[in-house]
Image 1 (cartoon, rainbow, N blue to C red):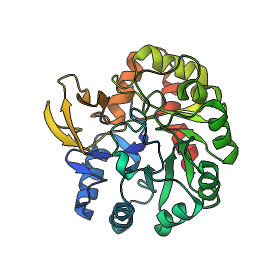
Image 2: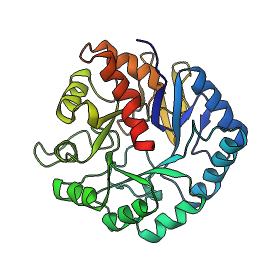
Image 3: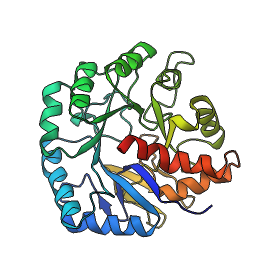
Length: 300
């Protein structure tokens, strides 16, 4: 399949560059961007995971300055904050540090948005004050995705009522064992107003589950993301990634054996789209919709 220019709404880092690194520099941002563009990612959102407020105050301006000084605003139109307003429950918090999880509020959203460069914030739909924070973010033009939570259907619906539009990597950011009926995966699938972002690297979700999610939501309500981290491009081995002692397997799976969770992805969105194509389920036009068009519509 010809690459039409993939759009990735969740890029934590690339080949040695971590956008959540407290020592991030403008040169690092541009290095990652140039390599991503060369690999077939046309537009992306640098993603900063759960951290202290000082990290957001430092790194968001650095990313924005690097992007603006190189004339890349059309290709890097903002950042995605995956936290800090998520669940600190083991499993739901995933590879994030639970000590940095914060309770959301309208005031906290305002504090984060001083640069006016945030495109998406991931919030746990079960977090205290979640609807208030979601409503404030939407007033500011920030898109809200819910995830890394243990939210039930009522809480997911309340988030959608407040203005949430997306689900962050549906099927991940939750414990390995869930209630068979009352869980955040079914709640997200059942809420028709929410578009599901899913990681199609072949490790976060098995192919058959990717098929079920897309069949349930429809190709107009799914956006493929990579969730790639700094280990993308590394050789198999042990690395410290996103605060985790992680193992990158020869097959590309990146995980924390102790926590029994994945630590982001070591795949670009182009690699994810190749996996999706290998499932032989969607037309080329539908694949473009999943890997480009739906994300572009959100960013407009």
